[in-house]
Image (cartoon, rainbow, N blue to C red):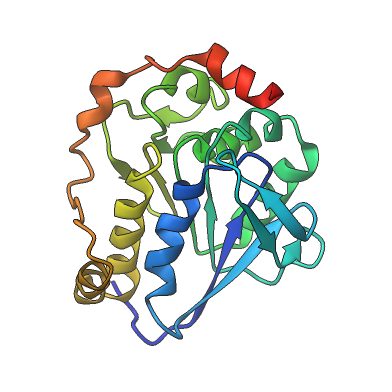
Length: 219
């Protein structure tokens, strides 16, 4: 049920080598909701955090001074390979997930949630080209191979990169009404793919080049 008058703080998590569209696609949508959403950018340390594609974002909050979060979104990117071994990141996720109303991930961001143990026994999806690599981070997660995104109640996880924007609109529709989501899609001239189960990219399952990803991390 939507509640159009409730104000919520959305925490957007950043880390080195995050994927640009993973996070900024959804933030474009949530930022267009209006005063009902306050976006807080968060990283292990406040300041500039560089993406895989090069541009950096200036993050406002560290893990230590992060405000109370109602919503949480975790992007993917090759940086999740190293963040999965970062105890501070995993503890932050465990703590904030427990307090949040709703938690979202895009692409390999679900691997971080899986590594933190917060998705155990929960249906989730991730990037299709690196599906097995990411899903190995959460062996107790009920991974869904064919899904644009998976809505499991408190947890909503999307497939790779652009799928996160479709997921964001679906969450907006749930929290603030489908009409609001439709208006935002029109405002941003975005074609919203509404069928969570329709995943044309499943045909690329596990065809990603892990060696290429590792080389990018070393570059």
